[in-house]
Amino acid sequence: MAWISPVLGTAVFLYGGLVFLKGAWRELRARLPGMMTLISLAISVAFIFSWVVQLGLIKADAIWWELATLVTIMLLGHWIEMRSISQAQGALQELAKLLPDTATRVTDQGEETVPISELREGDIVLVRPGESVPADGLVQKGTSELNEAMITGESRPVKKKEGDEVIAATINGEGSLRIQVTGTGEKTKLYGIMRLVADAQASKSRAQHLADRSARILTGVAIVAGVLTLVAWQLLGSPIDFSIIRVVTVLVIACPHALGLAVPLVVAISTTLGARNGLLVRDRRGLEEARNLDIVIFDKTGTLTIGEFRVVGMAVADGESEEDMLRIAAGVEAESEHPIARGIVQTAVERKLNVPPADEFRALIGMGIAASIAGIEYRMGGPLLLQVEDTQVPDPLRKAAKAAANRGQAAIYLLRSGKALAVFAVADAIREESREAVRALHERGIEVAMLTGDAQAVADAVAAELGIDTVFAQVLPEDKATKVRELQAQGKKVAMVGDGVNDAPALATADIGIAIGAGTDVAVEAGHIVLVRSDPRDIPKIVALSRATYRKMVQNLWWAAGYNIFAIPLAAGVLAAWGILLTPALGAVLMSASTVVVAINAQLLKRVEL
Image (cartoon, rainbow, N blue to C red; front, side, top):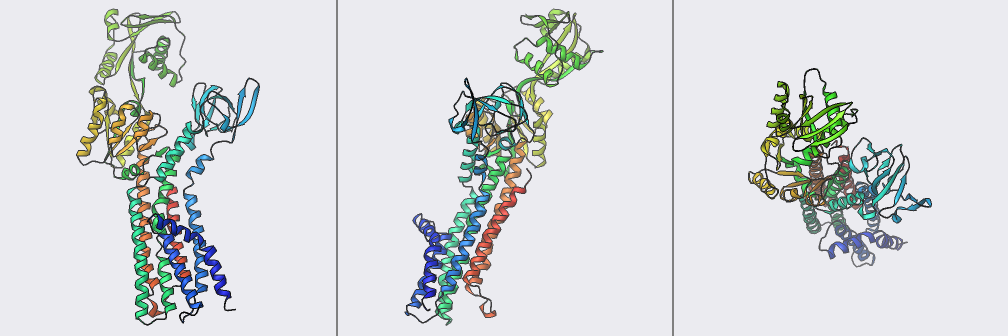
């Protein structure tokens, strides 16, 4: 009977404690002692002491029961902790699940179902209603609406027609699509997102380095506290078995697991939350710094504007309607390839106007164009056309044209029978989202600046319309980084938002580089954070995510570190005189509970509205 406890206790130690002993070996080999080292030290002390007593080398009570209970509780706590971690770090698994296992490939012989690993660039795949797109590609035939929320964060379905790009793992709506594959496997946008998420979760922020150092310090403190506890109780004349139990409890309760998990769990969840909202974090330090931003610099073309001409203003002669004039102007310009002409036509299309067909289209060299609609000839052009035609221009049209010129916009007239019917102000159109983005940043106390190579008048007009605080105009590409450094020299924390090759140096120079996802690969690689949707409204989301993430990190670090201020003295037995003593098993429960509290608090980050 005397050998039942040591036999079973040894079995529990060797089998149940093996995971901790292996972990301790890895920590010591890496010279980074931590939680596994302390747990292994605790159960090893209890195990060796119990065998010394069992063999009669000293007179005391063995602690086999305490050892077995401690290992069991620690295993349960370890399982709960790992489960919490896996739930928090499920970003990559969630992304991987978005891809279908098979695809319907269309060949000359008909349709065939193949694993997506067999798809190659140039293949034609059929995506039926409700199915997931198996690879990146271009729509060859059909129209439908795709749910891209899981990739871009865009909540509304996106309409796709022939020639449009589609992204792997997005979900098809009610239409049927034939798609030509342009990217499979590692070449898909989904894989790129998974790579960025993995890199972000692996990268360490300053808070993570602080937590790592604190965990190593706490390990040393726990060992010292354990030795002092043993010496103190022995000097007070306590039995050796009582002293050993105190030491084991101190080592267990001081395990820095909660401290070690405080930041990584928040990192994993914030990275997932960002990806779901179209924010891909390439470098954790960029997200960490975003909470302290003082100013955001936007590149103008392609970021605040759409990078294409549109009609941004117009005036019409008395008796004419804006809708009719724009419809006729689009008909006249329909066959022209000039960027301004394409902008007028596209504006009419976007406003869903019925563009009439035109006949007898011809170019008026150096002046504009002419065409007939319903047998009536119309002409379109700039100020030179007015001079040559000796055209009558009503005062409202002259004033509108002058105002457009002051804003750096092109003024294009529509003429009929020598009379000006309308004037159109054509310019690089401002994104509707830009206004909301600037307003949201101002609400957060952040300045907004604009950087552009355009003329001062053009830049000032855009800035005035959007409410931008600072304008840098006529800036050469190589000087953009210099402007960023000038603001940094003023003590400001600067974010740069851009999408082009010439933005890359400025993105790399800024405290936070934010690359527009639709931009060039160079710009994306230079940025700390990538906007998948190319939507400037996502910039304020970065600030909100950064501030929420930092709050959770601080809360977890305070809890994980503060818990030990009370736990270690309690485990050492400072309240023993009042009959309050912790057993090793209860110490293990408290240690695991502190880790679970940290995990639950990190999970609450998922509730943050961006």
